[in-house]
Length: 165
Image 1 (cartoon, rainbow, N blue to C red):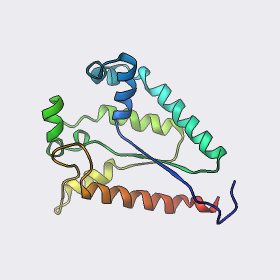
Image 2: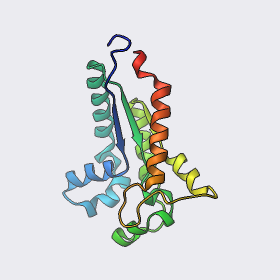
Image 3: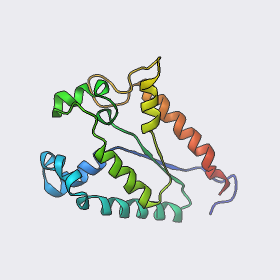
């Protein structure tokens, strides 16, 4: 471990449900086939994901570098109003929480420090002053989601106090 005051690095790793889709798509060599397989066959990705997260944490620990995983829901996991691009691109119009829930469970089981932005994003949408969380032409965060994410990460880092280790 580093001496107090010597802390200078931290890995903040943001992911969403595409982590599971990409893992399955790579194994099946088809993104379309991965759509259903991610939910119907979690064994294709979940155990390897948990193992990979544990290995990442172990390696970073050995280097004295703290880790924080940030789970950010995608537009189609939050609201149909936020996911117009998804409806056009892949035909989904209802929020899909199945993969999000599996990913939450996998992160929890991996034992890595993490925060979940799902409740923050959902609360923002319910607010009377709600602003879009995602861009209209692509799946990337709009300014409001970037602000929520930054605040959550700062709050968690302050709670973790990695500079004290």
